[in-house]
Image: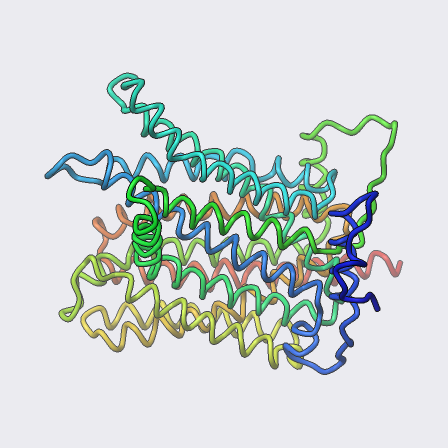
Length: 469
């Protein structure tokens, strides 16, 4: 047990490294717990460090988009002009790296130390955000390019860079969890991870604007010439995440080799072939893709649903999405506390049936506010019973050498799954109507989700019989 004395933290040879090492040693010395539920996870100091990094990093992710919209409104939007085209450009810049680099990032996550990826991506994202005020000033002075203000081009480039680094951070974070959490505690760890993600989603979008405004006012009160309070908040959150993750111990060892690394596309293909040979992991990935498709479609359909509900206006669609987030958070807490006592098949198939039933019921109550809120909450609740066990299955059954590739493919597939409903759900609703689209989504969950689950079980039984022979 190291002494918490500052004189012993630092040595002339390597002061920063020794200080961090002593802090990490002290964190790792916490007594282990053996009980079920969240107890062992909350007493795992290495997971607590990762969890703290997740909180700051994901909060910065959510508030970043709110900050971009605020900057567009303040700097670029002309009076009486629709803000939509400016926001769409930012969203495209944020989405393209997710589609282009998701799988590629996973390959490099397997080749690099994951702790370095977690720390580096947060620190560099923080630096990018803190550069925004300078870039705006320089590019606005430079004029425009093809009619687009130089400052806005700078925002798009920063957004593209932040999103590209996020594609490396996401698979590294998922791959680290099974390195620092014992297999038997992965389910509550993922439950806590999901609960935090949903809470930050609500907090980030609901409180992002007040937080940014407060930070701007606080900095202005110190010096009227300081107008970079928003950038300081978001960039500082990324920076804090990176500094906190410096304390993380993953147990990885760098293994320098003189052998030539395979081509990245070969590594990506290895990940695809691994999924082909592992029906349970493949099924888990399919279930997650279907789940994200449903939530992406719901994000689009929430606007016309809010318009049909007598008590809401279209711009108040966030109330419906918040209900889904609260339901998922409650479901995650229950899965983390008692889910280990239930077979994975019971959780996931029950969750799939619950999601499908909630969507079908929602199609019948498009004129009833509290009925819609209750069913969307149930949808989120049952979704936790699918998403958390499936994410845990991927982590537990994928070997360490393949996790980056598999999580990269997962990241790629999920981002494509998010993009398609965003493009198609609104068109389908305008052609067939809201209730019909909700029924189609319900059928997709039942046929696609349960069908994939049954096929995967047949594949597992078949492969086990082949091995016995």
